[in-house]
Length: 218
Image 1 (cartoon, rainbow, N blue to C red):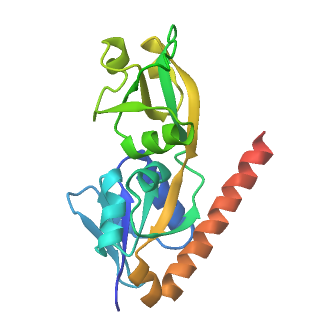
Image 2 (cartoon, rainbow, N blue to C red):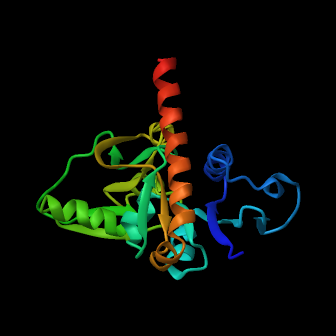
Image 3 (cartoon, helix red, strand yellow):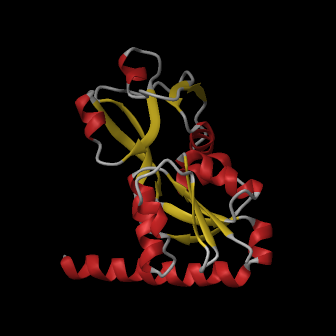
């Protein structure tokens, strides 16, 4: 049987995503075992899971090493991989936002210095409002940039906002809400349509069930 390769993001989100696959009937018991294996197979179902860094999922899928995978909408917007976006899994929800020190006042007479690892998202956002910016690419501790005067503002993922508040920053503008998305390699979807469609259907039912449960708990 030709295996369907599935790339999952490492970490808590990936574990939640796998639980959704499992509930939908696409389980792989070996993935829960304590070991150092990198791939996990269920021969009877013809599926193979593997964990990768969240930002790499779309690369594995676009290049065909994975047939399908789960990537954050932020990664899809930033890197624009040539993949099919199949389903919003309604988990891993947060937002990309602009944050600045509480006393920040924009000076439109000069370029706005923006520290971020989401350069393309930031450029698209500010281009839409006609604001000139100077992108400063950083990979970690983005919140430090405005504190030390490296940037005026930051563009970053915000979940609870706690880290921002603890560093004297606040959200001044939301850019886009994001969540985990099921994506597929375009060629794989063409040749493995039936299997991938069964997975979409199964996961869609789990998303609907989770949404219904949340509403009932409110």
